[in-house]
Amino acid sequence: MTDERTVSDDTTLAVAPDVNAAWWQDAVVYQVYPWSFNDSDGDGIGDLAGIIERLDYLEWLGVDVVWLNPVYESPQVDNGYDISNYRAIHDQFGTMTEWERLLDGLHDRDMRLVMDLAVNHTSDEHVWFQESRRDPESRFGDYYIWRLGREADPSVHDSTPGPPGRAPPNNWESHFGGSAWAWDDCREAYYLHLYHDRQPDLNWANPAVREEIYELMEWWLEKGIDGFRLDVINLISKPEGLPDGNPDGDWVGSEHFVDGPQATAYLDELHERVLSRYDAMTVGELPDVSIQGAREYTGPDGPLDMAFSFDHVQLDFGDSGRWAIGDWSLPELKAVLSGWQTGLADGGWSALFFENHDQPRIVSRFGDDERFRHASATLFATLLLTLRGTPFVYQGQELGMTNPSFESLDALRDVDTIRNVRMLMEERGITDYDEIRELVEHRTRDNARTPMQWDATDRAGFTSGEPWMPVNPNHREINVADAQARPGSVLQFYRRLIDLRAETPTLVHGDYELLFPNHESVYAYRRRLDDETILVVLNFDDGYTSIDVPGADPDATLLLGNYDDTTTPAGPLDLRPFEARIYER
Ligand code: GLC
Image 1 (tube, rainbow, N blue to C red):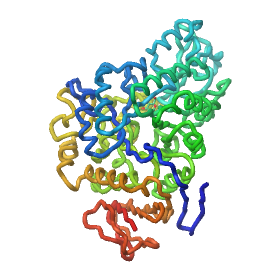
Image 2: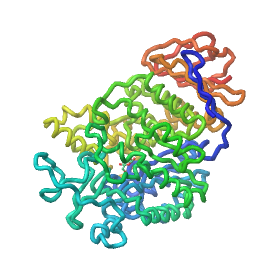
Image 3: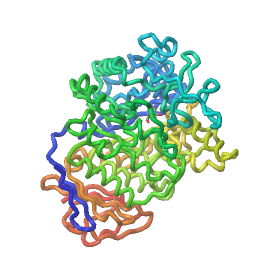
Image 4: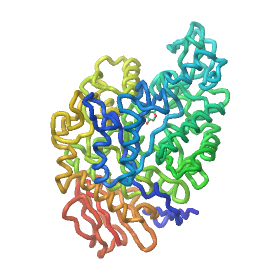
């Protein structure tokens, strides 16, 4: 039971119940984006053998689990999220034997492997889709969502491809821009694709499709993996009749296909048939999920273990959504994160993150990557690793890697950015990239995808060849070799924090109490378990801030701070720019 109450105007308290901890609650996860992690064969693209070369580094860092972005056979239209064979490894990344060596290498070091699975959709090159389009009567005929479409309204200009006189069945949009429907000449019908037109959505309403998915998941679990990250898994159920969405919505149709009518039932079935038989962790990527929804998916009776939610990384969206820049404020960030902390206190579990392969670098986005890169990167590290939930660190985040710059549209690789930005330019009559450059550089997923910065040499130690994306020129200063050798580096701070979390159950399981919800610069909270109280104080300002924390104990011990010479609190805390402190008493 949650006991949520207002202690004073300035404090919100949520009491967490006793928990039966599962291994994945105590874990810290590290995300490896194979395209950009480490290239062993000089083709400029990272690979499995390259990851194996760096396993000692991950062990040294102290992480428990690796989440590996998709490495299955794929035409790579969306860098692996378009899977053409779920039981094979993509050539460029290596072989199944190398994948097995990777799994063994992780297990030998007491680390675990979580595979990334996209089963809302497949690649159009998957044999299921090839057969489905060729022959509606075949056993694959109903594996995807096919419709004949509507009769076109001659007064409405519709640029969707299709035969004259026909229009898509509804107004749903693809996340990558344009209609969510594409016309297939072979089958002479429209098929649904909530992402790229080369990523057709599977028809989960067909039990045979669900059966295929259960079998392939079991196949991987039998190979010894430790779990799945399930890509956009709350989009799998589309309502009967495929009704039109609100045309003014940010993602038209999403009110129908996010958490669709059967989503929970399908996932319950998946749990019963497959997941319940393994000690594996599942983390659902759940776009637009509500707190209540996440409680249902990840609570004690829910089918998944933990939820990625996105409210906190949408605070800087503008009025027209993702492809606009908006202002964010610290009280808003605190309200969102605290809402999730208290909302899941008595059921459900969060996957905590600030970065991943779809998000810009946090130090450039919400911190200060110029004057206070070290302090703001370590401040976000402190926040990430002292909240309740399972923290996910994205490759390079532990170095305080920053967004690069993109000189021209040709410098972009990400299909999402390329499509959406082209459409925006067309809509707004923009021909000069410079007019839209700020937005692109703020938002593009390519920000996260520049090669990992291993050392200060020309290609950052990532490859001996030509990297598929240029390395960020700041790799001369920001790189693993330097940071490992320098005691005060962002990397060393991450390592100490990961260690601290591992030995402090209060940080994982303790309750969460927000102090000063409306303070403009300071984010402070208490975590409490049994007799232990931990106080975390973070100054989000690039100037000095003084704050009097009620009940701050002069005998408290400073467990960790991101400035060298911090002492224990006696009286008000004088915080320096982006200063972070963790106290225990
Ligand atoms: C998820 C992935 C993203 C991908 C999309 C479609 O959001 O994180 O990279 O483009 O799903 O599979």
